Each structure stands twice: as C-alpha cells, then as structure tokens.
Length: 223
Image (tube, rainbow, N blue to C red):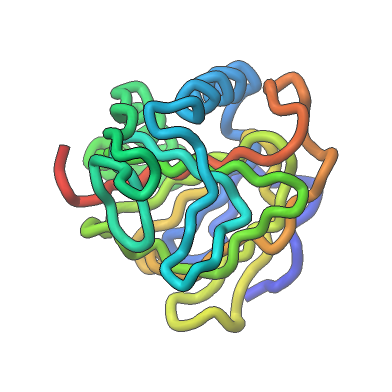
C-alpha cells in the first residue's frame, strides 16, 4: 500500500483500500456553505459543541457536536448526560439523503445507497493544533459504511489497516469538499488525522479557518 501523500493532479475517485473510497471535490461550494450553516446551529445546542473527556482523564483536542444520537466514550445515548442532560438535535432527513448520495458516488452502487440509513452525525471541528489519533469506529452495532465530509482547511488523513495502529497505512490529503467513504472490508480500519494544514481552506465556504469534518453513521440502534 502506498504510504505517500496523494497530490495534484487530483483524480475523480481513488480506492485507497477495498471498500475505502476517496472522491475529491464531491461537495459543491453551495452545499458546503449550507452544511457550515447547519453545523453552526447544531453547535449552539440543545447540546453544545464541546471537547470530549475520555475515561482516562484526557480531553480530545477536537471539538464535537452530535446529531441524532449523542456519542460519548464509548457508547451512544439519546441524552447527553456527560454535557448538560439534554437530548441532542434530531437527525434531519436531508442529511440521510446526502449520505445515500455519497455512498452512490463512492461505490457506484444504487442498491447499496438505497440500503444506507444513517441515523447519527458526529461533527468535529479542528483548529490549527487539533489532531485525531488512530482509532476504529466500532461503537456502532451496524457495519454500514461511514461517510466522511470535509470542509475548510485541508488535512492529512491517515487510513490504516484493520489489525493495529501500525503500518501499513496510507496518508491522503483531504481538501474542502472531499468525500471519503469506508465500509466493507475497511469498515473497521484504524484511521486518524495527524495534521491540519492551516490557511488552505476557502473562506467562501463560511469557514474562515479550521477544518469541519462531518461523519455520518448507522448506529444500528434504530430510530
């Protein structure tokens, strides 16, 4: 597996690993603006954006707000008892439709897209110094794909293997508007963000600085 960073010219679609697909420039500017505005509303509450405290006492450097289900290490709840005890904002139908369109774009499979039914969004805001260590998304009871959307500053996205945090892994530069979907054999691959590239975003998105990452998931817990 190539461990270098994908650079220009940017292809239309890259299969980074089986079931893991990068679609550069998938979100048009207008849709990025709409998502930024929606995320700002969610960040205000009812459960506001916060830095998540981990069981060992550490605090994540990214700030997170959730929609549909509230994620806290390492489970999903309807009520944010680790923040303010309120239910999180509802997951809107239009966000589910966006997720199905993303799966269709990544896999070219309308049947797989039709079956995709995300019920939560985890929205992470990265400032210049924020990072995300290599981890697996395994708190869901469903093995449906994870849909990841990037807006704002570019980042280095490290996509690894399903066995451990070590090599082999591939570093992919995710730019504002990029789509990354991972499912199938890569659904439980380790992944993370070792670096944000400050000043690389487009202010017209509504993001003057920092990176916004929206991940859609099917918790398998039902609506």
